[in-house]
Image 1 (cartoon, helix red, strand yellow):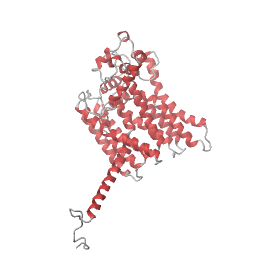
Image 2: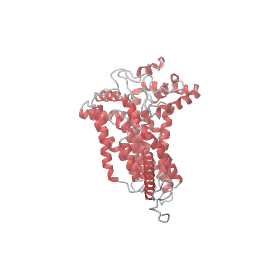
Image 3: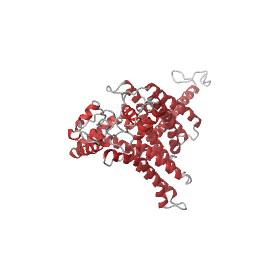
Image 4: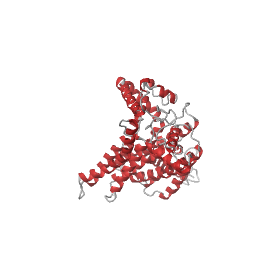
Length: 468
């Protein structure tokens, strides 16, 4: 089904297509920072970067979303992405287009390249080339590459984690140079966490998977030892701690209490499970002011960190008080999470991107999952544990957002993880269509080569001398 000889020479062309598409998105979004669909957060990131650059620290000049007072410290937003924008603005001035272009070029190269590396390792070069092409033209990734939000770099970081993990866990991995790969795994994990702290739940899963794979491969080799194995695993753990610790110290200094990284989990869980939803999740509750109005009056004078903690407690109380409502509400979130159809409440851009990205790719993902399962049963060569890791991460990520708060863009890292399956599905469907067409052509040739028949079914006298 998968051929070993894939045109790897197409990769430069695929990278070129990817970069051009994302640059087109960046140029179309321009130098203004406005309220485009699904990227409203870019207004906050832009304002915060300018504020930090002006020497005011991580604060806003006016009262800001979600409930941050003017001049008060905030930890709601990704520190790393703010620093990225701040660095670009320091070099190019307050020029959002420059940040968009740099981001588009980096994503245009790294997203297909990392996808190709991962897929080649687990499914072969043909599937890798197809997966790189799929991700290079995926509508959501093209659109968000031009937006000043964390999604684009976050997806790159997720793919980077999987690339390093599968490199360490490969059955053919050499022991030499592994320490360097453990270091890169730590850097990739730390980068992803600073972009979106929710991935901190996935990093231990990745480390456990890598330890399991390395143990299975090296337990019978000379010099193997558990101390050495766990010493190597400690490398990424220490690196991740090094990424997080400075911001934990900063948060304690700013709020006077322990905050590991960001102050958004409590807000999300409170709003996502509020009784206002009843049992049918409402993705956007009429805009920002209505969210603020849901915060109890007695909590409004708290600083952002304390407010986040208290809102998390309130959200957990919603679950304890009405567990059945929580279950139905979580189930209802799947409709928004897996949405692939156009809706009246969405604008033309949102509907177009949704239908011609996830709407087109979803059948390929499903077909790829079926093919991967069949190939596992028939012992066709593939790195099944690596595919299971990607499915485990996709499932964990999906579960977290179905239990808390979800929007379509929160699913995008899962879409990236599914690209190898999409490639497998596309290859299967293409090969099947080619075989079917060849079979039909063979049938037509066979019919054309048969002697002409008379209407009564007998041959003509000219073709049957015995009857003449």
